[in-house]
Image: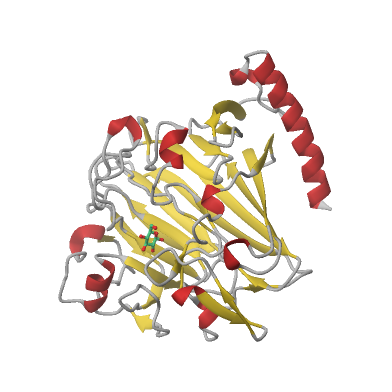
Length: 393
Ligand code: BGC
């Protein structure tokens, strides 16, 4: 069973990490099952108020890209990628230390669960039983509740896989946590490949029927975190339809054609081009883009979902997923109240999220693809964020 293997590996990591801490060699305690150039470093990253130690895993590939992942919230803390001249920048919003992640912050880099995005009125009925969830967004449940997966400690195992350096994080969510039924075990694995691709693999099992929707909530700015708004990024989304919302940002149930609307990103279009078209009811409701796109070819295979390109740096990000939807959120609620990396305040639209997912409020919308997980089944999903440059500068 993979679980047992994981536990065994975890003990080794724990021992190696402990030795690293005892000897003060935090920089040296990488677990290397394969020779360089792929590297993993684990570094102490502070403590939770409970005293639990948080660890930062830094993964480097053989082509100069580096990412940071912490075991608190299974958060992706940094993504350093070259521009078209080889200059590195960190392209995800976040914080310089653990304190920022522990404060009130809008899910920067976080693994979101059990249910990414909204469930109307925090209620759903499964097998004839109505479940009441923690309500934390007006009348609705958002991103797993008051203490979702983004605010939990995960157990980490770092190793070099065939594809590249990798960190596997496991969280066991108790039956009834935040109102969700069933004890759910979730394993999220980040792997950094030599194609400058971050592969995020999700796996989950349950001991009773439940619902789940897992995503990563990184805010990207391909010019570099804190370098102004993302309005100039050129975006393509492989979606002929999107799910319009009501005033609480709950999908109405309609799958609406993007044709002739500001939601048509089927050819490369600047994010800022139509974002303030207040004549468009959906743009108005979202305060910009805060909508689920119905990805084309939704029969479960990994395929290109979206692409973003920043014209000055030449950085390009492609998003691949096997999920049916993607929330395109343009940081409309960022308002300068969060001070991020290098002391920079993140203003409105300083980052955009491409959250691969099942559709919001699916537990209350039988017509949407099912989000039910049953005992004996394993939910598995992969998202890839792949970086390159277009050489335009
Ligand atoms: C939601 C937004 C929300 C943001 C931060 C996004 O996934 O769609 O409405 O404000 O997360 O919580």
